Image (cartoon, rainbow, N blue to C red; front, top):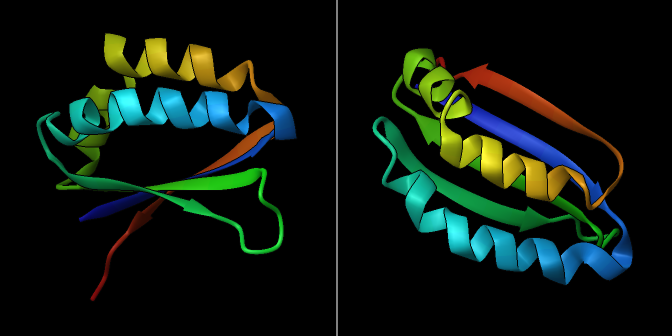
Length: 95
């Protein structure tokens, strides 16, 4: 099982724009082969810092998603809203 986290820091005035992007893409990502779900979290102290947390059956499914048109389109629209580089991590669940 792979857990993918992506920490994103947005221009404060752009958070709502990202929320709209995420709402439109969430069900499509969750329907992608191998995806077990994707959640959006907000930092308690910094409202413009959001983190996606997705669960994948294995790295092959995650890589397939990352090479898909869905990812490319969503990421292109999202990264324009950042005020700093995103921090993405892929974690292997051990227990």
